[in-house]
View 1: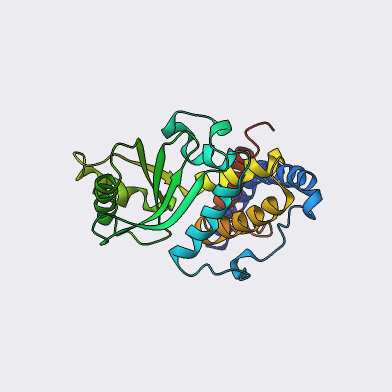
View 2 (view 1 turned 90 degrees about the vertical axis):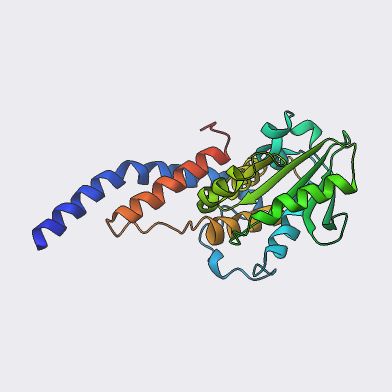
Length: 253
C-alpha cells in the first residue's frame, strides 16, 4: 500500500512540475506589473478579507456596479459583455448604473441596469450561490413592460459551477427573453486585464485588485498552491491558476 501511494505521489509530482514553473514565472510577471500597488499581494489571506461586506449578493453587486461605472477604459465591461453587445471597450466606459430597479409592478427588482452612452441598456442579475433562476425571466419581462422601445441586453452573472443548473432553467424558457450568461471567471479576466493594462486611475486599480482577490478566493475557490504536497487536487489548482494568470494578461505572455 505504501509503495502504491509513493508511486502515485511521484507521478503527481512529475505532472505538477511544468505547471509549477509556469505558475512561478507568471506570478513573477504579475509582481512586476503591479509593483506600483505594492506588488502582487498573493500572500494575503483573501478568504478572511473583510474591509467591505461579502456576505450577501447585494454586496457583490455594489462592488461590481461601482467598478463598471467608474471604469474609464471599459475593459472590464468588454470582458463581461463585449461579445454579447457586439462592441469593444471604447464604447463601454463610464456608463450610468442603477441598482435594485423595480419592474412595472414592483414585484421584482433588477440587480443592475446599465445605461450605455449609445442609449442601449443592459440588465444584469448577479448570483453568487442562489440558483433560483426562474425569477430572472420574470424580471426581464417586467423591465420590458416598464421601459419599452429600448434596445435591451439581458444577462445573468453566475459562478462557473452553476452553469449546468442555469442551462436547465434556460432551456425551459426558450420562448422567453434571451438572457446571456456571464461567469465570475469572466469578471476575473476583465479585472486582471484592466490591471495589466494600467490605464485606470490608481484608486480604481486598488479596489479592483481587492475585489479580484475576493472573487478568486470566495467564488472561484482559488487558493495559494502547496508545492510540498503531491496530489491531483494541487495539480488542478496550479493549472487553474496558470489559466487565470495567462488570460488576465490577455494571452500576451
